[in-house]
Image 1 (cartoon, rainbow, N blue to C red):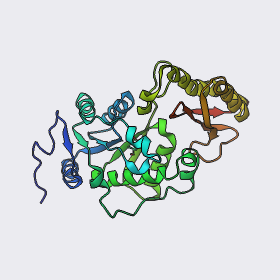
Image 2: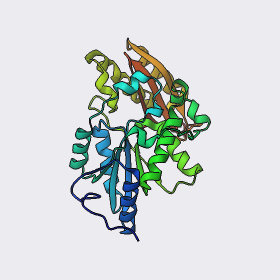
Image 3: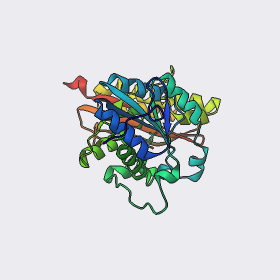
Image 4: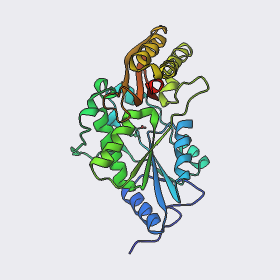
Length: 296
Ligand code: PAF
């Protein structure tokens, strides 16, 4: 028989921070038995407006209890320095969850998620070494492994991810399909500053002048998408011209792909993706484009 939940497990209207996976799994299982849907918003903390949007979208799904995980996952970082400087402030994150009415936070220790001796990881397949994966070897194996662990702990009906990390969203969707994971993976549109810059926890590392250069990423995507009726070459050369005009921006890739990140079609739905380093900060962005629509 399942033990009834106490207010230390779950308090509607409050926020309970869970550190122990077994206990949280018991809580979400009891809530599901009581007829609730569980919506997971996986994060690495430093919650901003983009995460708030994910939580709000989770509330829109039917009859959900929202669980936010806050875990800076070491296995998805290449450089130790990048992991070290990643912002951490659990109290501030819990306050955001309180404001957004997310009653359950999962904030495990690294040693809980990766006890000594853990060895098995997920292989993202060929897409895992393209685009982001080409300059961040092992990154998506780390992402998929931790997301799969979070799914196993929380056993969510829904999991929400931002479209800003479009390749991550695609690979997680693919993982759910390929591995028969009974969780619906939901993508949520990117939240932007008023000048177009996509919200990211990394934006805080930009100096004032770098912050200005960084707007070139979204500006290039918009400029490219405006000429999408003319086809792929026009999109890429227009976007590239915007990026080339900005000093101090070190372009990693600018690519057009199909929505599933396979080769771009000549006509129809596609995704325009960019990654660049501005100073020491690596930024990514992407937008949907409709190629060749003007030719129809
Ligand atoms: O997008 C993120 O914040 C992370 O990659 C995720 C999905 C929480 C896995 O650590």
